[in-house]
Amino acid sequence: MSEIKTQLVVLGAGPGGYSAAFRAADLGIETVIVDARDTLGGVCLNVGCIPSKALLHVAKVIDDAKDMASHGVEFGEPKIDLDKVRSWKDKVVGQLTKGLDGMSKMRKVKHVQGYGKFTGANELVAEDNDGNKTTIKFDHAIIAAGSEPVKLPFIPHDDERVIDSTGALEMKDIPEKMLVLGGGIIGLEMGTVYRALGSEVEVVEFLDQLVPAADKDVIKVYQKFVKDKFNVMLETKVTDVEAKDDGLYVSFEGKNAPKEPVRYDKVLVAVGRTPNGNRIDADKAGVKVTDKGFIEADKQLRTNVDHIHAIGDVIGQPMLAHKAVHEGHVAAEVIAGQKHYFDPRCIPSVAYTDPEIAWVGLTEKEAKEQGVNYEAATFPWAASGRAIASARTEGMTKLIFDKDSGRVIGGAIVGINAGEMLGEIGLAIEMGADAEDVALTIHAHPTLNESIGLASEIFEGSITDMP
Ligand code: FAD
Image (cartoon, rainbow, N blue to C red; front, side, top):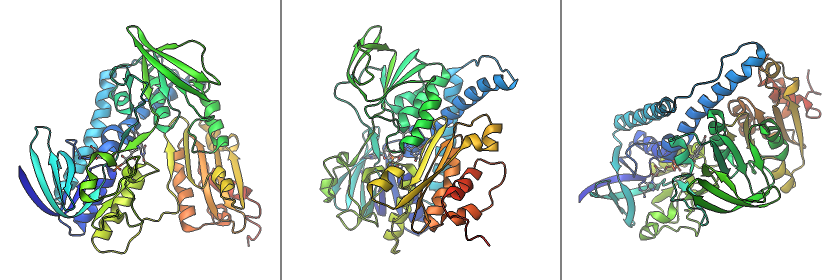
């Protein structure tokens, strides 16, 4: 057993963990980062955000190439070499994890490969893949242990035809018929990939809309666009999955449930993620963990134990990489003695589906629930020159304004590049911009971003005070 003494240990090297470690090192704190994986980057870089986007890029090019036939350019049927698709995805991941490794070395952050568990309030032990143990004694710790896919008790998860997002990203084969269990972001993104590569994809969702966190009118645009691509069974639940030699037989219950069990080649379970708070012996350090496995942290990301902070998926929703990154920075700065807080007005959410679905700040649903005196303004892309020229008029830009102040308090975009466009709305919310500020900002023509300015003009009274 070897031993290391350090000022700061970061447990988990995902976007939260590595951002915290790098910021701490930049602030002169001696830092050790521990992760069970060989590479830095956590779920996001290794089996999440990045590999999924690499595959979604492939899917988009296939779909766009097919669509070109109606504009007079035919590319013919795509020939898919799955090994090459997989190596492209692995190369993207490799490039980024290698980059992180370089940044870590540059900052002299020590990387310990191993599964870490607390053994005391100032000590944890990491066990590597070969069973070797390292004791790490620390003054401060940041728990950034992330989350894992939720498993369902009635599903034979040990059957290799039942996969989670990590299994789906492995791209072992392209099943003829695949069920995506769960109509949230991760399920839809992976469904988009497999459909473009040739699978017949069906989606089952217990609630009455896909991506339940977003507004219904926004999701309606998406659902209408994909209705010929996926069979979507809303208000329906899976009650049983029976593994037989010739496939997985799935039984359903609910509004759109098929009467008899349906055979699938693969079932992708994407019903959410569960935090890893219960797996690190946090109690031995005196850190409280909720029944669900979350660790509670205050606005300075401090747990109930003063010198132990927690960030990212393990402290709660939204489970998103960019939230973890910002929390990581604040935690490191607080440990360095700075009076910083994690207190954003808004955190963006994006489904990188086709079309993309993106929202930030208050949704209309939330504005209603909170009794806000709001007004929503929507600009349909059927009136956007750029959308028409790109043959993608299905989109919509929606802004939510506080009616009293005229300030932008939320926004959603569904359409191509929605995720890239959303930044402007996030900035407007953070800066306290009102409808006039956005409407008077000259947006380049023809861009999809123009729709944000035009939605602001729709808001009543936005340009009445123009000089
Ligand atoms: P994680 O990235 O979960 O990293 C935690 C790390 O801690 C892991 O590497 C794990 O091995 C390690 N660990 C845990 N316990 C221990 C232990 N005891 N000892 C040692 N190491 C340990 N988010 C977005 O913002 N945008 C996206 O497009 C997006 N796409 C996604 C696609 C998929 C398929 C998935 C699964 C997730 C996606 N997410 C996306 C979510 C995003 O990946 C997470 O929100 C983000 O990775 C959380 O970062 P984190 O730092 O909290 O922890």
